[in-house]
Length: 118
Image (cartoon, rainbow, N blue to C red; front, side, top):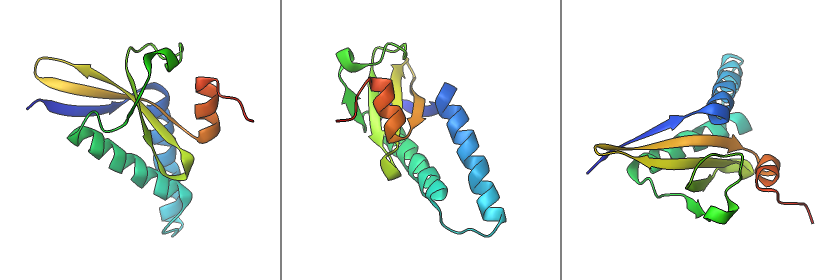
């Protein structure tokens, strides 16, 4: 069985770092539960599920992959509060690496894929 690693890169890495910072500030103020904390837990849980099974998420059809994402496969995991985590899978001889490309809210997800409001 191959080793599976999950790496956050680009926008996902920046979003995760900012979220982690906000959660740290909330905890310093004594806030025990917030939307930010729920989202952070949701991201951590999703990355663990992807480590266990790289094909955990819903696969995005190739023709729907945004041109702004230079990948040939894309997977989506729904997070709490209508957020989404988008990742791609790269395989090597000894391991599989899942690169998390985006962590975005519902409106950013719609914008990325060109979905319009009805």
